[in-house]
Every structure is written in structure tokens, then in C-alpha cells.
Image (cartoon, rainbow, N blue to C red; front, side, top):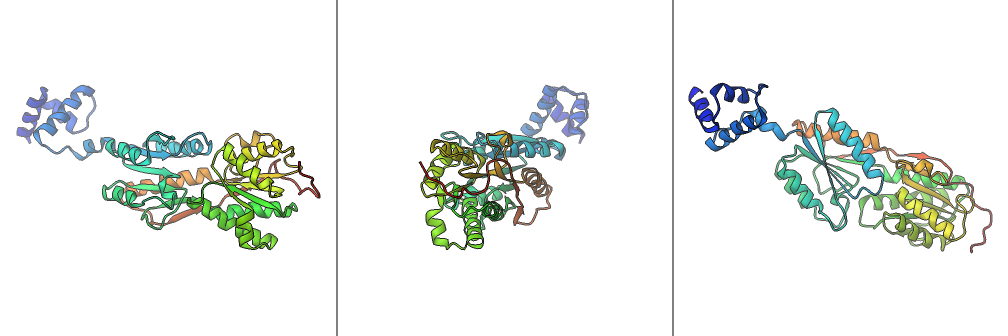
Length: 344
């Protein structure tokens, strides 16, 4: 031990006492001196003590889609706060159109020695994506948790809202108001949450209104983009099919649907009712305040962190899906169906 201390001290240009302080994690050593000692350890081929090797274990990566949809910053905030309370530092990596891909962001985080990664609405939700990327990550020993979107091909914990139950809540609410022509506006069909919403919507429309599945899918389901413009385009199509109510797969789409209704000279909710999804921040203050399905963001975010930290700690959670129940929040964008409406 004495010989080793002398070697390291000589290599680093410091005293043996200083080397001892660094190796034992004691305070009172300048950061530059500490780095010199660690570099000397590496150069001489000595293994760093465990406590020094864990210097990056406090970083946890969080990969989200764009942050324009307010639900993603809301989820990132919950996850970030939960990580910070547990002594970890969240590293937010955001995908943007034309920017870094999920794979590039993953590589960047792994290179920085993160202890684990939480993916929100990533490629795991895309049924056409190659799921091998997640198995490769597991082979590298990096724990991860996947939020929003389930794949049976990936052996990892998933955190999801109950999309099918969400549609039942929305359709039941609108049917109770007398609506019989209810449309569904949502994103591309290849995504798991979209497929589940369609399943829930079709089943609820069958149960509530006695419609057949083919009619529902062909006439009352409209795919678009998860944006305000996407909601506007989908709502325009559904208004053209005489829908008196529209369920949207995001609050942003719902705002687009309201805009489309107004462009057609329709009043929300007197002429047409609109239901959102997420209950994003500030959505209660729109005109009219939006009736929406509240995604249980706090519970989902905390569960994602808890599950990941169990994985990091060596007691992996079951490789299954944890499903959280959404809630209907009734505000001012839904009302009784119009008895008879002449469309412009």
C-alpha cells in the first residue's frame, strides 16, 4: 500500500498524505489536485476505489419528444423533481424535428455515464420501429424505463395511462349529453397509444350507441398530427361528416378542433362539443375552458423514477406494464347535443 501511495504521489506531483485523502474521499483537497491524483491512478493502471468510480452515478437521462406540447415539460418537471429528491441529477435530452435522433441522444447519455434513462413517447411506442435498440442498451448494462407506449418485444418496465378507459370516459360523457355523431381525432395509426385509443373508442361507441365497428372506424375516426394544425385538419374532416362532438387525442389537437369549428361558423359548445386529452398546464384557461381527460402525470412520473431507481439499485421491477387510470375533467367545451343544426 505504501509503495502504491508513493507511486501515485510521484506521478501526480503531490504528497502521499494528499493521495490518501483523495482515495478515502476526505474533504480539503482542491478539485484540480483531486483530478491529478485520479489521472495518476488511471495512468499507473490502478483501479479506482468504488466510491470514486461512482462519480457519474448521479446522472439520469430523460429523453422526450419536442417540448411545444405542454404535457412533455409537465412530465419532465415531475420526473426531474423526483430524481432530485433522490439525489440524482436529471439530464434532459429533447428530440426536435431535424435535430438529434433518439439513438443519438441515447449514445450521448451513455457516453456521459448516466446511471439510467427514462424514455417518454419514444420509438418504443412506434409499432414499425426496430426494438433491438433497447436490447442492445440492456446488453450495455444501462437500466431504463419506458413511458407512454408498450411493446411486448422489449423486456423492460413500462408506465402508461389507460388509453382505452380514457375513451370510455369521453364517449360516455358525450353520449349522456345526447351526442350520437361523435368523432375521434388522433395521431398516426402506427403508435401504440393511438391504436389503444381507437380500440377503446370503438368499444365505447358500440356499448353506448350500438354502432358497428366498421362504421365507427371508417366514418368517425380521423388520423392527423399531434399539433394544433393537425387537430384543425382532423376536426374539419369530422365536421364535414356531421359530427356534433369530437374527442381529441391531445389538448393541442383540441385547440385546433375549436379553431376549425369557429372557421365553420360553429359555436363551442352550443353547436359542437370538444374533448381534449392530457389536461396540460393552462388548458383550464382557454376559451372556452377545455373539457379533457386528465393524464395522471404526477403518479406516472413518480412511478417511472421509482421503477428506474429500483433497476439501478439492482432490484429490477417486473418487466411488465404499470397502467394508470385517467380522469374526466368537465369544463366549458362540452354541452348537450344540438337538436337540429343547419351547417354552413
